[in-house]
Image 1 (spheres, rainbow, N blue to C red):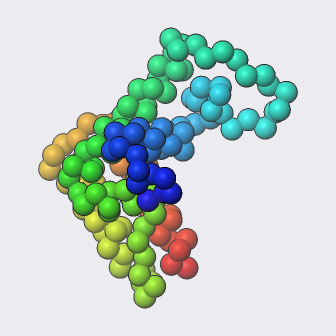
Image 2: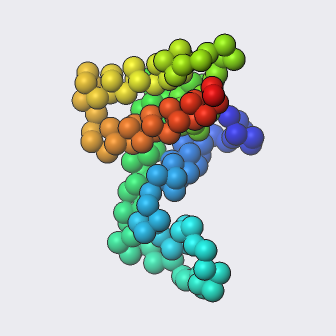
Length: 144
């Protein structure tokens, strides 16, 4: 768990994590200008227009991530759910293959449960797919 997150109430931890995931998995062009990864330092900050289409879509995206996180926490072990959300897999030094990692196997089992048995909404399934690929890459980086 990131430093300082243990002391935050659960709803704040969920909101913070949802915002970070929305930033991570949203194309730059779809982000409100204050969050874009701009390289041009001459661009001046503008006043936020809360009712703009891009702001509304971004807030909906954050809300979707928050629902995904809340569902995951309610259906899995909390510590493991936070590892999934923060892309911090627990890795035993002896593993040499992705499929030997318990966190990875449990994440895929959870994704299959939500997709095939519980028939989750398409936005949740999309978020789980993005997370699973990023989680897999993180594990692969660490076992090489």
